[in-house]
Picture 1 (cartoon, rainbow, N blue to C red):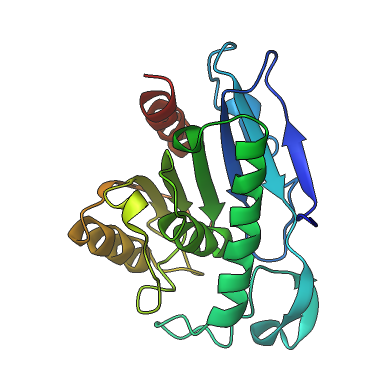
Picture 2 (tube, rainbow, N blue to C red):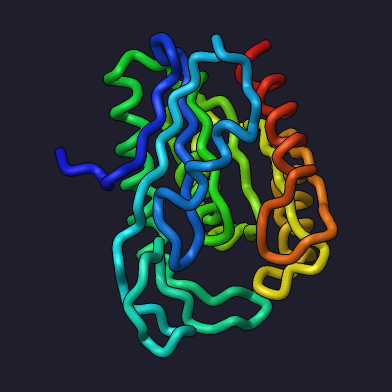
Amino acid sequence: MSYLPCVEIEPPGSASATIIWLHGLGANGHDFEPIVPELRLPADAGIRFVFPHAPAIPVTINGGFVMPAWYDILDLSIDRKVDVTQLAASAKKTQALIDRELERGVSSERILVAGFSQGGAVAYEAALSYPQRLAGIIGLSTYFATEDTLQAHDANQGLVIFIGHGTHDPIVPERLGRYASETLSGKGHSTTYKTYPMEHSVCPAEIVDISQWLQTTLLQ
């Protein structure tokens, strides 16, 4: 089977858990590679990091310019009009990476899907519709783009989710992150919602919170 090309960082010993981390629009799998040492996870955590590269496609909001993207964004209106078909296809490719981790011997309940911006929207779709129980989701500076079309699977009902967002985000307004948290909480998920005084990015305080959440979710 053909998989998305990925940057992979292996733990010192054998991997007993995996985090699949999706980048944002115009970036690539190397974008979040530097975050691994910054998380300061225990050396014996046994976590494999997988950072896929999105394919290069024309993006409408950027004048049709071809760039790495998980799906096309049609305009920047508040309802975040996106190509849902392309988003679902990217979610399926992400699920194929989850399947590969199962083949590598990692239990589904030890696999977590994370994503920034566009990648976060795909992470919600991929994880919540996956037919086996996962460890959780991290959604950073993102939104719940497929709220109306998602076919959630019972296996991931009540899944734990960490959501972080910048209060000064000019790309994805903070209220969209808060709305995603409230919506997912209403569906029975245990969500942790944190805001930070930043724009469309990641900050040191957020990295500390992600690390603590990961250690609670994967290492306890």
